[in-house]
Length: 199
Image 1: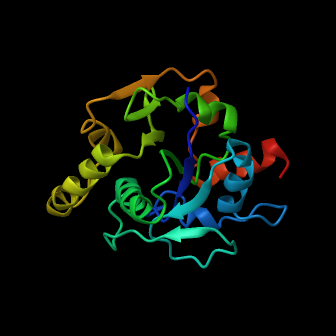
Image 2 (image 1 turned 180 degrees about the vertical axis):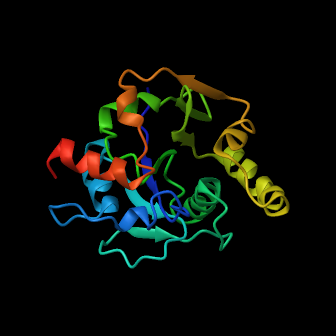
């Protein structure tokens, strides 16, 4: 496998209606926000560039690069992904691929995430889990993202599964540790996560 320069994008700013508050700014007992926790937890990925992407109402205490959602509204994670791909293609063209991870995948670790890395596919994700995903960054994938902008604007959004279907070279991978892919959608799940991990 040839050397790759990989980015790591943390998707933030969802509506969080079930959680009742912005997930990225949820506070752990050790003082870290959930955003800071996931960035720290995935440090072993050794990404060339780590950034957040999306629309967030919170003023988050971190020094991450923040890529703004070009759609300026809550159209879901695909808006953040496309915004990031277009921004990266202009400002970090040396990147060859990027992981996209929702901020609420608090148990995700580098070993699990790196199972998605591939040189032979444009996009890969775990079976039954559209996120996290691994997306190659090249002229073809950037063009696909550009072409989807008017489609998303007309439809008022697009699911991640629908987004994935636009890539001819896509791959589903069975996750060796599916328990690491559980989202924190409700406040009771957040409390359980903190209790079980003593943080």
